[in-house]
Length: 118
Length: 112
Image (cartoon, rainbow over all chains, first blue to last red):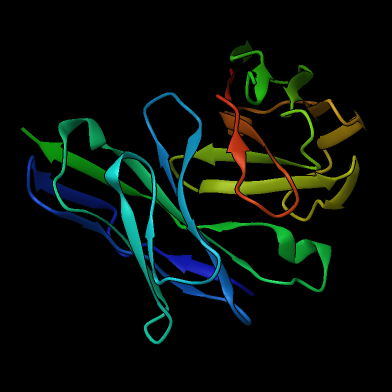
């Protein structure tokens, strides 16, 4: 079974500092990896994804994530945090080429609340 | 494109009543997902459809929950009878093939 771990429930960072939100995964075969962001009282919004190719993926709002196969990680990063980045962030994984329909679902992590302090 | 549309945005009902949540996916998307989000359990996948056919409903908590997708542009999630523990935000999402999912704004359900 596939799974995602977001080890930090809460991350605090000062505005202008770099931020990292951690994610590790477990999946059979090669993964599809996603990051989503959820602002208060809103649905999840897609940020970026890794399918194949370059291990460093660039996404929306200046975010990027680095796929590390040996560490089974897909940490979300941003060089300089903004107060407006404060939100709940979800990592998700899906197996590639699933053999059964049930494996086409995304498995989401528990979420990390990012707070950027002014 | 208007994105995924959900209605109602808020629903307050009394225990024992039937609740119907509605979703219109993005046109052209062939996958539709229903999720439930609570503080205690996070984001849970309830059921998903591919080309209007339910593929995996293993996340549906009880027989009180049912979902239908009569056509490519409409899906419902029904709870009958509703209970206070069903209070949550219910999200609908859609995707084209196995690409990223697009989420609706959610329906906040409160069962008194």
